[in-house]
Length: 325
Image (cartoon, rainbow, N blue to C red; front, side, top):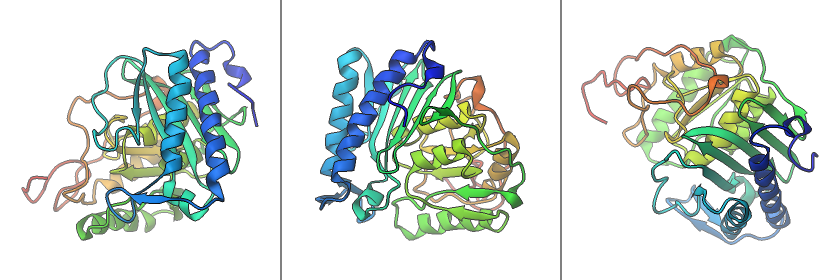
């Protein structure tokens, strides 16, 4: 595994940010690795499916302290520190978006898909992304305009364009109310019927890394915890040559708690078109409003905007039945 920023980024304008993020991710990763096979003290947040451990908080504190040591004037949005206050408002100031332990349920059960995810935005655009799985020892790094890397080697998305030949990733999330479960499984059913197969591995950040690496061809998730889940992974997909959109087909907003990523714009557009036929529950966040700015630079790619479906609140944001959210 590479010991720091990839050699190809040595002269990149964001190399200092990348190096500090890699250092922080590895330090937090060591905390996670040491605790991985030990008994855990688990607490519930919203329900029995939404978990937090002492390791989550310890890793976040360590990451914040490492980054603040180099950049004391930067802002931070972290999963654990934002648990009660929410994401807050994103400004143009340099802002670090940190998930200290993405895949907490996996961590609790000893399932090795866990990671630390660190993204940096400047002027509301994601410019640095670092994701580290300390159990499998995979370090993913991206910098805007500089490419994406796994353990120091440049990576690229798959070139799959058709739904029928594509492997899809998604997640069931932590909501357990009947309406949201019906909506979530409805989307999965609609896509699975058209695609080769589907995978749920329990980490939004690592699912995005799988698209960047070409392990899966596409991934979408709606209503995940916050910007910290997708900031780094979204940039990794874009820098690996993929497309990152809102699931409704428009530009991706890192603050929207929704993401669709695919190896090609054609596949991203095809997935968005299927999602447009599906309902959202009243508890799920809808797409950003018209004119929303994207959170990636030109490398992010764009897919075709999907049309709204019939009946109920659809993924395109329209409510064909005439009811509010």
